[in-house]
Every structure is written in structure tokens, then in C-alpha cells.
Image 1: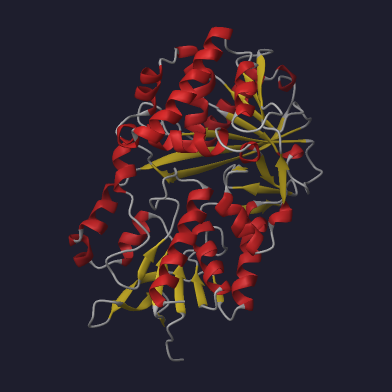
Image 2: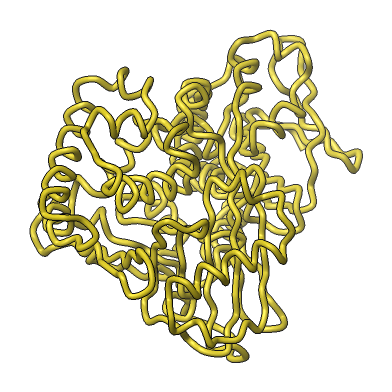
Length: 454
């Protein structure tokens, strides 16, 4: 079949690749999505656990009301009704057994709704709360007036600048920073934290809403996006491993070579895979270009997710933060998922972000760490019996959010005329989140369509 101007190959079937493919398919492009794994989803997928009857996400991915690009994508593929919106943000934070306090937004319009939450936050004294609010306002002023300064600063250095004490850091700033940036506050970019907090907490009240998927991640978006692309005359192929590109005499990509010996030509290409996978596709000569060579400087940060099934429920809360323990967050799947197995009354998912000190430990040891933290923080769990544990390690879960790596992130448009990039690691102004992945997919699709003149 002859290659036409609106033929596009997308390499990578996660949030970035599928959002790019769906956006282009809706504009009349003929899209082929190639995913190397047996199923779509990239680094945000789910699988069925036969023992319990539950769906297991590879990691706990939380959406928020400020994820405008993600919600637009889910609207496009008809999957928004699979979400649960918690209009009033409420995070239960535990600072030890029985020492709980909630961050609960008030009914005031944004951004004043967060002031109400902070003024009532019981883990801090009245003076610490006032200084916390003042620090947040000053951070927003720095974001407006000195973004370059923020971009050179770590989160810990920002806290020094804002005059935040150790208690405020440990009970508020650092849990949010680690959860959103996936790394140590001593290393993470202050500019990225400021951008996240501006969008999530210092904007409209609806932007602060926590949004959960009623279903497993794969069921949320993979099938629906694939069907949209199929209906538009495209194709979605799994177990399709891209090995490299063939170039024409003008230096443009003519086709992608597949490991099974096949070759797929197109007018334009979007690569929506992690940095190391992109570099494997390019010829060595491409590394002479600073655009691609700086991708080599990008570092990664790991996440560990531990899933526990218990013989009873131990908390009514959907979402709990732990302060001062290796385990940082608990998600109660019995309060989140619409469908679940009946073989274990309690199903909890735990996250250790920025897990460099833990990711190389044995799975049994990691499960023991989480169980110890659970029983220390929630007394009702002390007599609960663990029926099953699954440990999932993502050693290269996200790019490292340090200032140097953030400055090294490439744009969607590349020096190769018909090659575009997408992925949570592309420069979107956000840390490597689902929202960043979808924003990058939409940016790549928009740039490609503009170049074609669609």
C-alpha cells in the first residue's frame, strides 16, 4: 500500500502513544500504534490476579481534577464515566498510631479552599500553619516572577527560602513533593513542585479533586483508545518490537524496522517510549546532534508498589499518608475499585516513591517493611493476617526530577523532519506523571498535524 501524507506510525502504546494516536485518528490520520509488550499500557497498566479475583495496577496512579489533558483524552475515547471524582480533597495523614490529621478543603472558592484545609491541619501548630500558608503564597510569587531561580533550586533549598521549619516539611511539603516528583526533596526541582502545587492546590477548587479509576488502569483507557483508532481506519498491534529506522536520501525516516523482519513505512513517526528505548532506535550519527545527545543525561528514579490482601478491612479511608516511615502512601482498593474479588476482605496498595534505597531488596523483605509500617500506623491491622502479597518494582519508573534532568528534557519536535517525541519525560513543565504523558501525546499530535497542514 502506498504511503500517504496522513499515515502515521506511533511507537509505544501507553498513555502518551495512545493519546497521540487517538488525537490524530480523530483528525482523519491513518494511525498504526506499535506496542512491544503483549498488552497495551506501557508503564501504566493493570492485570488480573487469578488467586483473588482483583485487578492489580502496576503502581498506584492517582489523577486529579487539574489533569485537564488526561480528562480530555478520556472524554475523546468515551472513558470518563469510569472515573470517581472526590470533589472535596481529603487526605488522612498519620504521624503514628492514633495520631491522625486530615487535609480537607473548605467549601470556599479556589484558591482559598486550600487555606481552609491548611488552617485546620492538626499536625502543625497554629504558627506553623500560618507560616505554611505564607510560604505557599511566596512560592506562587516566585513562580510568577523568578521561574529561572526556581528552576535552579531544589525543593529543600526552596523550603529554606520560604522559611519552612522541619515539622512543616515532614508533615506537609515533603510528602507532597515525594509523591508528585518521585524523588528526594534534596534532589528534586523546586520549579516542578511549584508547577504541581499551582495547578492542583492554588487554582480552581475543582482542580484539587482526587480522581480514581473505578476499574484497572488497562480497562480505563487501553481498549477504548484502541477501538477509536481502529474505527478510524488505523491499527493497534501488540508484540510489535521496533528495532530501528530506515532513512531516505533527504534524512527523513522512511520506515521502521521490526524485529520479526517486517518493515512499516509512513509519512510521519511518533516515538512514545522511555529515553533509553528511543536511543536504541536511532543511528549512532544522531547522537552528534545536541538535541539527542542530551537525552543521554537523563537519569531515572524508581518506585516500589506493594499489594497486600488481608483477612479483614483495617481502615475506612480510601487514601492515607504515612509520615516518617519508608512506606509513604496507602490506597484502599476496596473503597476505590468498582469491581473486586471476594476472596479477601481487605485489599490495600502501598507506594514507596523515590525508592533507590529499597528497589534492590528482595520482595519478601519489601513486603515485611510495608506490613511493619501498616501495623505501626494503623492499630486495627495488628491482628490482621496477610493472605497474599505482590511486590512490583519499576526501577526506571520516571525520569529523575532534578534541575539538570529537567533542563535536559527534549521537546516534541525533533531535528528529524518527520519524527516527533511523546512521553512523560518530554518537556511539558510537569514532572513525569500521567498528565505529563498525555500532554506530550497531544503536543506531538498537534505539532505533526500542523506540519502536515491538517
